Image (cartoon, rainbow, N blue to C red):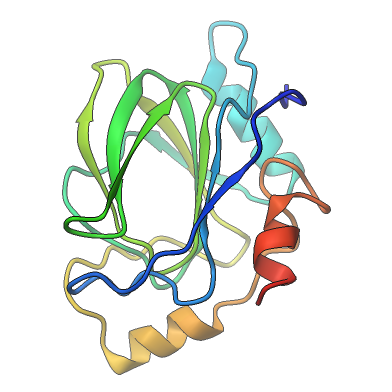
Length: 174
């Protein structure tokens, strides 16, 4: 169930950081307490909400403990259980704490890394149709930078649907 009383979405626009390109025009969106988790399979709640909003879930796992980014997919991370300190934006980037029920929307090119997490940390990852997570761990090529720039916007916000924060922060700004 989407938490209608959730705190506002936080937008973080990140500049290039060392070898990590980040996204020059689309901010990371942080949805604190986006989902009121219930039952014995909270990951299924994220999968249902992401699917309903056109972001087919692809995996259940954690976040890699090394800096990486994707050039072939915008990525949504639903925190199904536990907590973690993630570094967003590449080496010496911004550290954020995520907890069960939170969601991160990472535009293509955004660096991310798990610095520390609880043993029960579980994430559901999803991408818009036709997009996927290539794992990039070094400076992007010209072709990869062009791919980041031209990757299509998703039709809907993965949490809030057609008129959600993605529309406000990405489509109206892009």
